[in-house]
Amino acid sequence: MMNNDRTTACVVGGGPAGMVLGLLLARAGVEVTVLEKHADFLRDFRGDTVHPSTLELLDELGLGARFDAMPHRRVDSIRAMLDGGTVQIGNFSLLHHPRPYVALTPQWDFLNLLAAAGEEEPTFTLVRDAEVTGLLTDEDRVTGVRWRDRVTGEEHTLQATLTIGCDGRGSTVREASGLRSRAFGVPLDVEWFRLPRLEGDPEGGVGRFTRGHFAVMIDRGDYWQCGYLIRKGGDAELRAKGIDTLRTRLSRLIPWTTDRVGALQSWDDVSLLDVRLDRLRRWSKPGLLLIGDAAHAMSPVGGVGINLAVADAVAAARIVGPALRSGPISPVRLAGVQARRWLPAAVIQGVQRGLHRVILGAALDVDPDAPVPPATELPRVVRFAQRHPKLQLVPARLFGLGLLPEHAPAWARRPQAPVQEPAEV
Image (tube, rainbow, N blue to C red; front, side):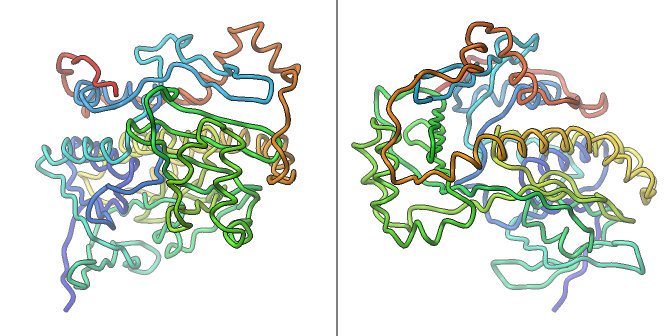
């Protein structure tokens, strides 16, 4: 049996882009339905960084105090552990900004915050366990989606004036749309796993970089969410060597993890992130718009994917939101979202491609099972940056605010409640 329903805006995907867009469209008075594939947001291996531009957006939406009340850590600098010592390469406190820091918080808490705010709006609906399986079309116009209830197996259709694909790098909507993308080669994949966090460990985040090895550890309070970079396509070879190989590599790279790498009991404790870097040539067609990773999949380098996706959502809501109350959106207006957001995405992807090529690609060609190099003098460019700390404003600006920060439209703003003491963990 097929159930048929109708909405004005169908948002596919309950990630950061989808939830922000759903909330903003509802505040524009648009009937919006967000279809989320899973039953909840409790999934590991998602980005946890909420950057200054997104924090400011939450203040504009009146959600800053609620965010501050959630467990999180504030990081005001970007540090890296190199062979020659720990260096600071970015300083967010140099930003002239109301929130000059990055907040580390589990993404599920962030998404639950947005979902709760959305449900306060009478035109907002979030449907969980809703797996989109295809698009509805009428000649060349997209008119909605087909979706399956993952609990009951029941098939549904949802007619929509506008369908927005926010379903990430593996977007079903993008695949069904026929829109073509341009892929950029990447030299790396990432193995994701947890390690216990003990008293006395560093706070915030840890990045360790040397020839053949790169690891990032994100502080989640009582455990570390860890990412270990490997050569693209090297997962099968690494797994064939046994889990002890990963334990040994990590303990050599970051010696203070030696007493806990045994928490990795098997490869079942490790998940592979297949890193992709691509960009749609066109982000829209009649009745359809794609934003976030569905339009431009980002590398995890810099941790900026969430914030670019959120900025896409804000721009999309401002450009199409109020107009949706009057009927279908013209192709020209839909194309305006890409015109607004293409340059920030392209520039960040260009920076990521450069880092892949110049630093990561060459370093990952080194045998990762060879001994970690002894301490050496820091590279000249790093020493220069340390002598001129104001240069740290450049990466802080690029990765903290981006080229084109987006602000909530006036009709979406709400009064800010008094800011509570931050619930830093």
